[in-house]
Length: 149
Image 1 (cartoon, rainbow, N blue to C red):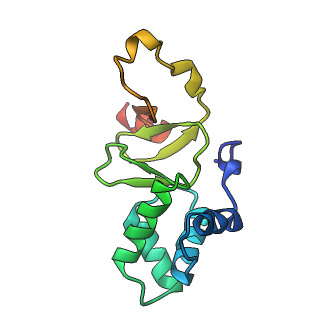
Image 2: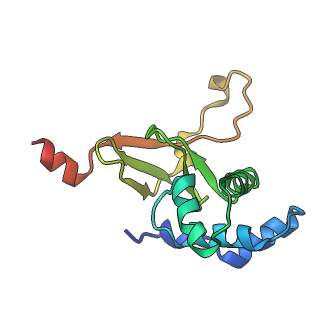
């Protein structure tokens, strides 16, 4: 599904520059991991990223993939998601959007969502400094919903 959200993926050069700006080296391994993240049309697990990058760089270790995904998430270049599917997923699209998650097959879709509409009034923050939030809608995709009938 190509939407305005999916078209907002950053470029390989932009993400490599972000690494350099943070004082990190752009190694062939990191470059390949970023390239795979940009090419995958889903919200991959670390294992899925590893499998695809290993085809490009056969000697790649799991640790390199996990460490790179963690670094990219720390830098804000990637969003680490716990969608209740048993494994963390990764989203290269960092602009405001929500996720639809199928409880049966695990399908994940990006959907536009105005996060500002969910801002808490100051009296409900209870002194917290809010730095992030996620909106996840869970249900059944059309295919799974039809099978349940």
